[in-house]
Image 1: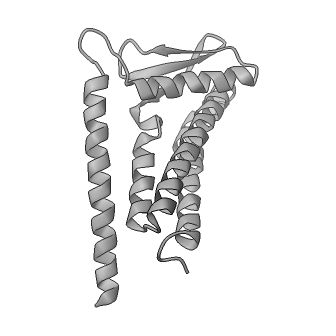
Image 2: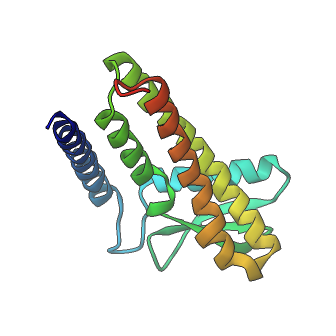
Length: 178
């Protein structure tokens, strides 16, 4: 019976944390995005696009980010060529919410949980920016492989990163470590 109790507690912690964080994020999106009178993407999505441009420029590409005129996204351009776009789902916040929910559900000490959740979130955010920059370059150079790159290769980078962080958390810091 104790085994089932642990599963129920895990699920409760996970879903309560997830829904609270998701609700806060949804409120933020509702207040920060605009569709009426011209599209305006949330500030975090715009920031991710601009930071991606900085990474691209660091590696020698002439890049730019512009608000898309017809949708809630930011266009990424390389050499003035519209190559990719950053939408709300690309800004990593939804994935960070998922990551934090898991960390809290498998909590360790309060200090370890807070530090790992914070540092892990920053790591995911940074990996995501480099992932978008790399995807943008690959689509620019190999446009015929856009579907393969976007749908298979690049999700595996971000989800693989999150999975590895979860494995480290459970095995090193959580109360359930083996």
